[in-house]
Each structure stands twice: as structure tokens, then as C-alpha cells.
Amino acid sequence: SDPFLAVRDLRVHFSTEDGTVKAVDGLSFEVERGRTLGIVGESGSGKSVTNLSILGLHDPRHTTMDGQILLEGKDLLTASERELERLRGNKMSMIFQDALASLSPYHTIGKQISETYRKHTGASKKEARARAVEMLRRVGIPQPDVRVDDYPHQFSGGMRQRAMIAMALVCDPELLIADEPTTALDVTVQAQIMDLLKDLQQETGTAIVFITHDLGVIADIADEVLVMYAGRCVERGTKKDVLNDPQHPYTWGLLGSMPSLDGPVDVPLSPIPGTPPSLLNPPSGCRFHPRCAFAEQVGGGRCATERPPLDLVAGRGAACHLTEAQRVEFSADFTGTR
Ligand code: SF4
Ligand code: MG
Image 1 (cartoon, rainbow, N blue to C red):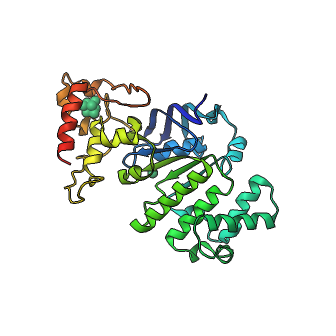
Image 2: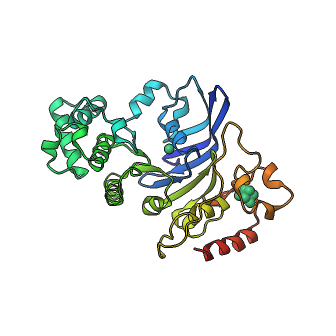
């Protein structure tokens, strides 16, 4: 049967005064119900752009989108604004880093949650308020029947994230898109919110696309992992495959720049030298080649001229010209240093 969500060869290009930004350039993935796909990459890699595309939130006057975004087989790229409006907040919803940007300062938390609920269900005010209280309780807000009448500024940062999650989940969405929802929080609160999301997913079976630059977060929450670089997927696989047996030099770099997941935390960090490229004029061939320490090993200048294909076997693979033998050799070096 069809995957719950299938993105096929997605291209998202923005026209700007300086030219066309190829923000996403041929991206494909699937997410099943009840599963979490972690999309990891540096800022500017196209991860947020991808998710705004799923929700249909780009300005059509400046955006060209190609490919398919199939939700239960229905292509969202050809859906009308009206259909998307019906789906957003209902069948699919989003949480992100800044709860204040999704919560209005002028209305109580309870009113905002219940209005979202009423919009999609036609429930009465009374039913919707009861639903808002129930949602606040589910996300762990103490005294929800009292706090429901608070304004966002009366909540702490962690509580606001919880309230935003309550609002996102009030209509039992089947797809939740989470874009760095814990990045601004301290470690303890971050862990609480991650646990909350995992519990809610257990209860509701919602599919989650979780976007982050933090592999520690991926290790915590993802089932499958997609590593993005400069608008393309460079590596995909199960969490175990990608974190324990990474195949792409960029993933080696990302893993090298985080503390070991189970080892001592005093491993020296080695960030990848250089910065992500401009997507106005992305590098030819492998987009990672200007920063890759292994391009010489491939030889013939191929890395600069030839785009490495992402050949997946059972959802697993990396887009890199290195041979299998080279990957084994170099990744052994890499894991040896961790
Ligand atoms: Fe590095 Fe070449 Fe592989 Fe790209 S294709 S990651 S430049 S070795
Ligand atoms: Mg982002």
C-alpha cells in the first residue's frame, strides 16, 4: 500500500532579486503512520523549506515547486488553498522553535486552542473549552482548568511549548511536523518535551517529521533519518544505520562535531570546516565537494563535476562517489577517533 506520506523528487525554487535559490533540489522520502523521520542538517540545508512545502505555506508568487507530496496518495502540491486550509491544523499540524510566533499575545491560551478545535470540528464553545482543558492536561500543564485562561506571556518558555503542542494536537492530526521545537529550551525542559512527544505519539499513532540540526535529538526521537546538505539528501537509513554506520563524509563530519552518544562526553569536537554553500549558485557535482576531505580520494575531479546518485537499497544509502571499500576504510578511521 501507499506510504502515509511520500515526498517524490521535490524541488522548491525561490525567485529573488539576486536570482533563483534552489532551496530543495530533488528530495524524496516516506513516512509511515506512528513513525518519526528525523531530518538533520545545518541551517540553510533546506529542511525547514521542505516542511513548509508539505504544509503549503510558501508564497506562490515567489516559489516554484515540482515533484509530488503525497499524503495518503493525494498530491498536496496540486491541492487548492482551500483544501490545504482544511488539512492544516486538522490532519497535519506543525510545532516550531518559537511558540510566541504561533500563539497570539492578545488571546488566552484556552481561547486559541478551542478556536482551532471549533474551526475544524464545529464543536460548541463549551465543548471546545473542555477540549482545551483536556489538551493542556495531556501535555502536562498543572491546574489546566485555571491555566486555560492565562495569556501566553503568563507561561514559562517550556510551558508555552507545551501549550503550542496542545494546540497542534487538538484535532488529533495524523501528521505532526516539528521544526526545532526544543532548540530554545534548556536541556531539562528539552528532555521533558521530547518525552511528551514520544508519549503522545504512542497514544495517537501520529506520524512525525522532526527537523533539527542536533544529532543528539535525532538519537532520542527518530526511527528513520534523512541527512540533508544544500537542498539534497546525502544519506538515509534507519537511525541505527545512520548513527552507528554512517556512510557519507558529511554525516561523518556531523557526527564528529557532536559528543559521542554513549561514550565519554569529553571527546574533542571537530566541526566541519567551511560553511554551507549559497543556494543561489550551488557547487557543481557533489554539493559538498568544496568542504569534503575525501574528494581527492575519488580522483579525476569527479566530485566537482558529477552529481553522486542516491542509490537506496531498502531505504538505505548515501550519495557519494567513494567506493564501498573506501567507505569502510575511511569510516573505520572516523569511528576510531570518536
Ligand atoms: Fe566527498 Fe566526493 Fe563523496 Fe561528495 S562525492 S561526499 S565530495 S567524496
Ligand atoms: Mg530551520
